[in-house]
Length: 176
Image (cartoon, rainbow, N blue to C red):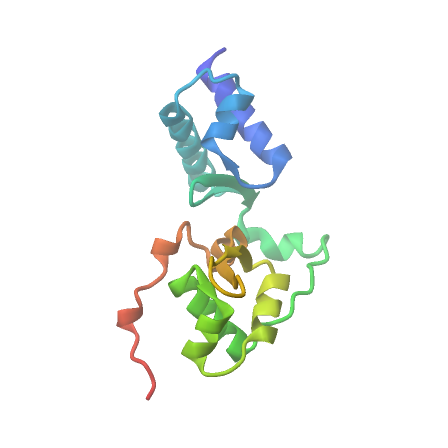
């Protein structure tokens, strides 16, 4: 199969699938014809082609996965035909809780409450409902508390590729 054909197969699969997909998954679809590095190069070629031509679609990287999505530049046109899902705006307490989880993950609710100094049941529930956090397992201690971490949706919402892209905390002065 020609290299260009494989690139367009990858593009078609990503368009049809819609969800984030790994290089390994893409490679298995094309019968392991290429090395992971070659697929990564093709993905980067597609990313650059979309970016250079300012296309309506784009491919974004989310940690070790790639996803095809619409270019945010054209969101106002898309919203005219697709009614956006109504997501609750996040309260200050919920944003504080999300920030703690993002920087301290994996973390338990008790650890969050110790940092904030108040209960966080509602904030954690709201973050979970909005797919910004997920249960990442349980600690092997009394009560087996749930530990939480952020999701790919969190990365997409912030427009970052990986958690390391979060701004360092030491650049912010804490209120006293």
